[in-house]
Image 1 (cartoon, rainbow, N blue to C red):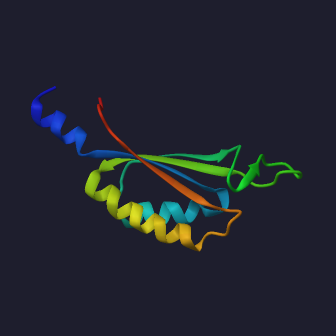
Image 2 (cartoon, rainbow, N blue to C red; image 1 turned 60 degrees about the vertical axis):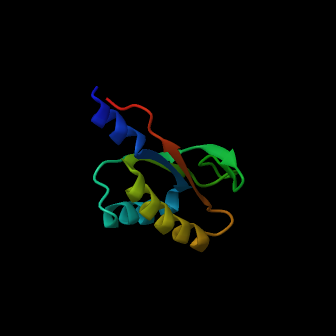
Length: 107
């Protein structure tokens, strides 16, 4: 890998978006609106966290979703701001969390 390519990778961020399954469509719309063309979504994940247990059962209804995308740092900042606005509109039970991680290497 040449030095220019290595520099580009360090300017990228991996966003890991955790949301209530019911909010996945809104997250997709934000991603599309910010012209993010590559992402992976896992639409039904089970787990437990600050918003409670989400296991898709009657005792613990609901599921969560995870969306992963690697974007330029400037694009990550824009998308994070939009996601933060969406997070404020979520109820305490829904929640929305986003992790921004540096991309050290990409092939």
